[in-house]
Length: 106
Image (tube, rainbow, N blue to C red):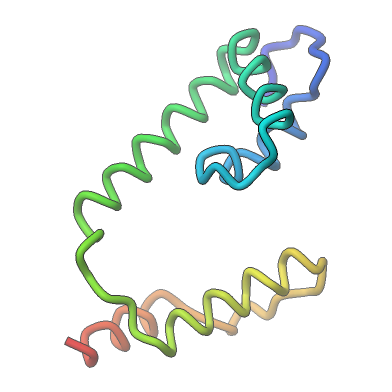
């Protein structure tokens, strides 16, 4: 995704860190760099706005539900694998398993 214009920070870098920006997990200097990019690049700003809206919707609809411990452990494990650059097996966690596990916990 790109607007076709050159930017100080490349669109792919901005989108790679989109969720960290949304979750306020970056140092202030990096956040400013990405926020500056959003002011220059409509496609990246649109993607940011969409993901921000989805995050708010999920929080509103599901924010009160407790996450089953086994599901939380699987998700955190998968995040660590992805961050470390290791291959993540497709069958590591599936949505139907997660939904079934959450239903059993209720």
